[in-house]
Image (cartoon, rainbow, N blue to C red; front, side, top):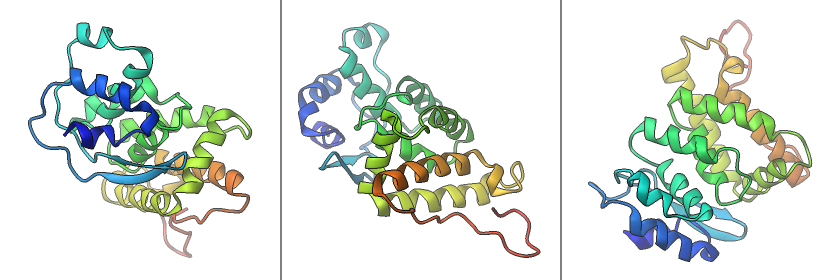
Amino acid sequence: MNDALSAAFPSELADDARAVLAVMPAPSHLSTFPFSVVVQDQRVAIPGRIYHDEPSADVVASLSSSQLQLLHCLYTRHCDGRVRQRHLEKVVGSVDPWVVPFVVQLVGEYVLEIVCVIRDELLDLAAPDTLGHLTYGRFLADNPAYFARIERRVVSYWNCYHRRAYVSFRGYPGCTALDVLRSAAADHAGHPFPNFAPRARSGVDGYC
């Protein structure tokens, strides 16, 4: 189990990852459905969901700042959406490369409050040539198939769960987040990135 979760981070963070895993309570279930992405030329495997209770406050206080960041990243994969959001809010403003896939993955999930948190933070990282813009751009340019899958999931969850509140996909917070991410990817790659959002169709409401 610990080896599997350590694989969520680049190798230079192995010692910090082991320190974090040592304070996490034993899981009630095994972590599920990891997804593989490239982070700064290293392939990592991030869990789809984890089932660990959160460690106590005194234990968390014993961690270094870098270890605490890794802890928050892992708990953004928790099975409880409220736990995911609470830990996301601690790291969503980070521009460290290993944090980025944890944030991007949540854009493609169904909890609207989480998508809104990311949308709001990404707007602050959207300016070209800022470190955040460059970091997200590199990650997405290095993982184009993964980003395409995230885009399709955003559209799917909008269509299934949020279309009543957001009749047009253009008004959906996930669409705004995708626009910012796609811009960063295109700037890094030096060419336009494919757009998998729904296209406007004559006589059909609800599309871009």
